[in-house]
Amino acid sequence: MAKNKDARPPTFAVSVVGLSGTEKEKGNCGVGKSCLCNRYVHPDADSYYTEHTSVLSTIDFGGRVVNNDHFLYWGEVSHRGDDGLDCKIQIIEQTEFIDDQTFLPHRSTNLQPYTKRAAATKLQSAEKLMYICTDQLGLEQDFEQKQMPDGKLNIDGFILCIDVGKGSSRKFDDQMKFVNSLFSQIVKAKKPIVVAATKCDEYEDQQLRDLQAFVASKKNLLLIETSARCNINVELCFNALIQQLDKTRGKPKTVPYQEAFRIQ
Ligand code: GTP
Ligand code: MG
Image 1 (cartoon, rainbow, N blue to C red):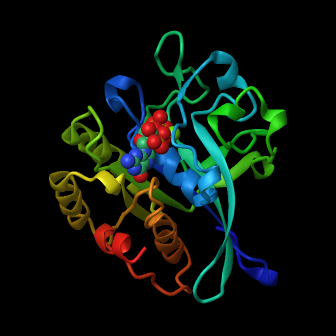
Image 2: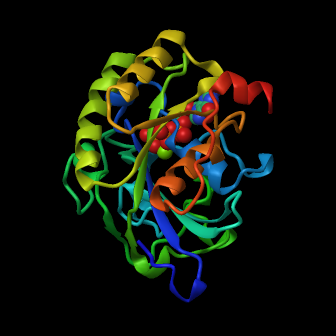
């Protein structure tokens, strides 16, 4: 974690994780990691993309944005809390890129399964470029080019995305099996974790209740009910993690989805 000496704003790196893999694991759509990152880093409507494909050609997988890794660098957000304290947040999404020919995961240098790989707290990728959107891949020069700092990041905390939406063909129990094994890995890193319930704009009652029970069964775990599509509780979710990374900050008030929707 960066130290706040010479009054420079501290910088924190956050890793966004959740069920990833082939269609067999994921069903017909992802759990919403990319959209949550997109909404946090570029909140305005014109910069929000609903589709961020993970099925890539070998050329796009090897380009400077993906850089043969199974993670994306989403860039940096300047954050000012209610208390006026500044900090910078760098965002990583841990996913799994699938080959558009074989429909199997692309081969990368890291051969660990997702649940282990996504728990990494030290990430490195020389000259890796910030990801913006799917159309950027192969046309990097037409988009803003920002590099991941020094090609190195130390992860300070995790956002664990769990899809409670109605729209997926995957079974919620299968997602939770994956999440249980992912959670047991990231917990070993001994860094703060916040759970983001994703797609709450179309949430399934039972799934949200099951997720609430999962979170309540863990010590000091916080659940934030989000919708990237409607931009509800996305900032709150990252703020809740930042508060745990930097205890000098005040605690944000957590607001359930329905209430946040009403006061929007
Ligand atoms: P992979 O990286 O491929 O594993 O997927 P992901 O976890 O990054 O999921 P992604 O953000 O790409 O979203 C998958 C699908 O869910 C897309 O069609 C999104 O538009 C949709 N989606 C994401 N967030 C929301 C949301 O808040 N509400 C609704 N209704 N749909 C969403
Ligand atoms: Mg993604």
